[in-house]
Length: 337
Image 1 (tube, rainbow, N blue to C red):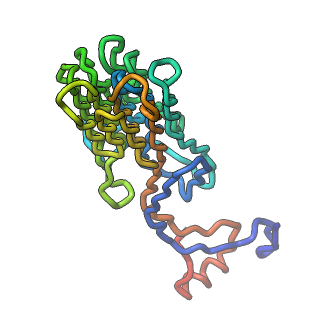
Image 2: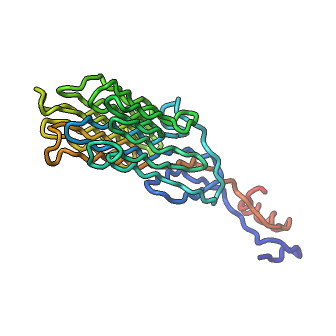
Image 3: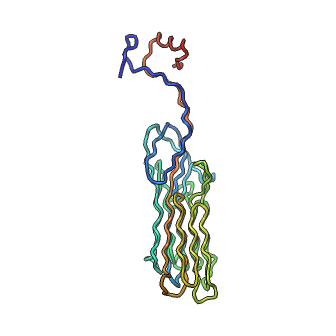
């Protein structure tokens, strides 16, 4: 729209005073859209969904813990893991994807019927945090943001930081060392614990790898912890129970204990932390009722965006006559343009 300005045709005249936009934190616990309030460089936290853990059965070895979802952040956490802030443009919308946790494995004594699922990727601003690798029972743990754990002789731990990015988004699962208990899933700042070895009469689960603390929301929260391994207890040995591995700080689920009458499901990873699931514990005689145990699901991921405070200078668009400028200046209302 135009108006006359002393015989000159031009845009509507508007005097806008200087202002300041406050810093703003937007958290996404499910997928959505982020719209920038100003053109600036923004900080971010992106965590993928944690890996699920496998099931286990009577008189079979236990399951490894799920790997944590990949951890990517521009600040507010450990300095070795900090990337760079990203530029955004005022009023532009950006797609945010929050990955779900990996699925729980079935209640079966052997793979692949008890296999669990990898976590799902989270992404924002063309940056992706990979889902955590699935924990497995006596078969290879899966690669992911952090790798899944495993158990006994048939498995190798899953690799972390897959696909590779810099700084690294996660660590590997723990090595099995022929132990009947499960190994820990990897976390953002540490690999899953290896199993100490040993099979009969009981074998504990190993601990999940630790996650990373971050204060982007204003609170000190730890994300992306690996799941603990499940424990094993033989029905015919002197040991009656064995202890599951602890979940890594950052939402990792604890592994299930083993006992003479059967195992125990592991614990799910915590929602919106990307924590890996705890592996199922096992034990008991070969086929009593109820000894086949379900695995557990990984924790969902999260995306957090922090916009900085921004100073917006005064402006006076339009075409102004010298008389109008003079009158405004005398009143103290002219912005100086």
